[in-house]
Length: 312
Image (cartoon, rainbow, N blue to C red; front, side, top):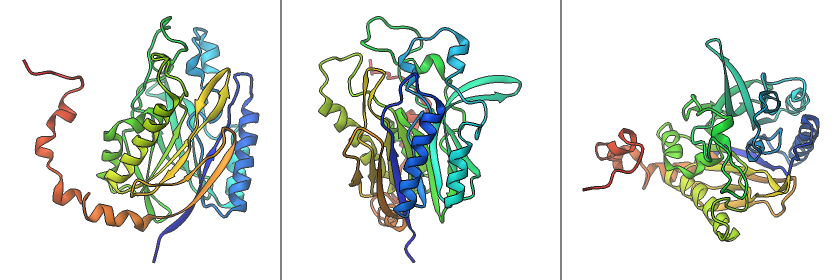
């Protein structure tokens, strides 16, 4: 019996710094309403779906920074989204900035959660590969201060059994690292839920063409899908946010690496695909049958070394 899940990719247009959580959540509910009308069982929203992409701003006031974070989930602002999804029986995933109390200390993470059809949070992921820098950089055309505001995630790349399948999560820059997909692939992942916020310009290379950035975005998610025999649902924020254009280009990628659904606008837009989790099987059982073909005895440098060490 095919394991088909109708998935909605809920791209969001820009959120300005002045926009409230209510503005964001109302728009997310609007996309959820569309998803219900189109028969979706699972909806994926972007990274930092509740706020503007605030790491582009250099903030030193702790209260201003913490105002971009959530201390609990759900909270008063997001409860209407949870309630609507529960009413519809739709599962969803979205990203937000999280303040977590752990061992008596406060930690700041770039997080994503997976919520089941009954409104229960069943999975949480915290971003591992933080890009950018930790101090104001006058040499950049705009800032990318994720290393200032977030700590490296401590969840690792887990997977969850859910909707008769195996699901994983990652966030934005994680998609550029093959280890992200492979760790989940080694746990049998069948669908990776990925939210991202990516600028359409490179702050360190002004002459980098938009077409190349689009190509690199697609290359990462298509390769990750194909090389691990998994669906990838890669959903962005798009449009001009606080004067800075975001890449957009949300897509649903088949285990073959083919893009089967793609957004056409830079605003709020729902893309839908019927995803048969059994489509993963051919790739997992042939060219990417890890048990038959992997040779981990030769991969030690991947986990034993961080930077490049060139031969003498």
